[in-house]
Image 1: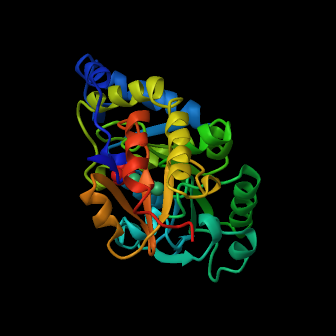
Image 2: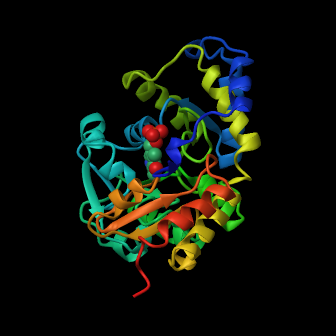
Image 3: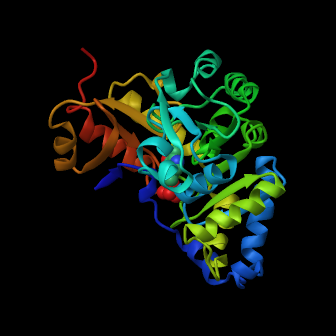
Length: 327
Ligand SMILES: *Cc1c(COP(=O)(O)O)cnc(C)c1O
């Protein structure tokens, strides 16, 4: 099957596995794992922050961030189909006692006006911005818009967390450093198990004091590890080998869109949004192409490091008769 369901289906390559096998390791909880320490140092620098913390998943990184940035009874506000509101269960409510409020926004991007109108939103509350925005089809936040919305939250006294699970996709697509967005947010999450190709792993970056406090959440959620350098080695390998190549995924996604009659202008990164119709996913599956759900009435085909030019040609061939968006 040509698996375009998600970029989470990527598997560690031989090079990545070799880096994991060769990793120098120690006890992470004693802060003695040199590979994890090196990952944290590099990621803080890349994201424009003082410090960073390795966590097993980006879900845990988001939850640890919310816990340090908020007070129980306050709010977490985000576009209504961000990961933190739809795929992390009631995490913000359970772990941090937060009221979860979703905003309806074009391309996953709440405007400063929307932020000004939120009721009971101030110190102790958190705005979460997602870049790229998954449910809108991997859309990139233009930097000026991002800053305007972020500033609106700050002027209310709220904190801002950037869920940058796919921030490297945004960075490569826009030709900007990840810190261009990252440095302005209080905290930033990066996920390594998507297009970067790691089996798991995430990083949370922020001010030194905030990251120190985030250790509490890491313990509380059961995420403090021992020889985490095995994972950190894969993540360092991904930084060196799998970031720039995201541009190939983006180019292939555009080519796939063109090949199946979808406007390539709707493809900003590695997601091809496909209008859904009854049975389409099953028909594509029967022809050996896996696609995933994007949001109600939309499917997605996602390119990633397990899919090359030949697979894209083959996918176009198999999909073009089934996907009918031309009419
Ligand atoms: C996948 C994803 C996460 C969670 O990542 P895990 O490492 O799988 O927990 C968080 N936010 C966004 C936007 C994601 O796409």
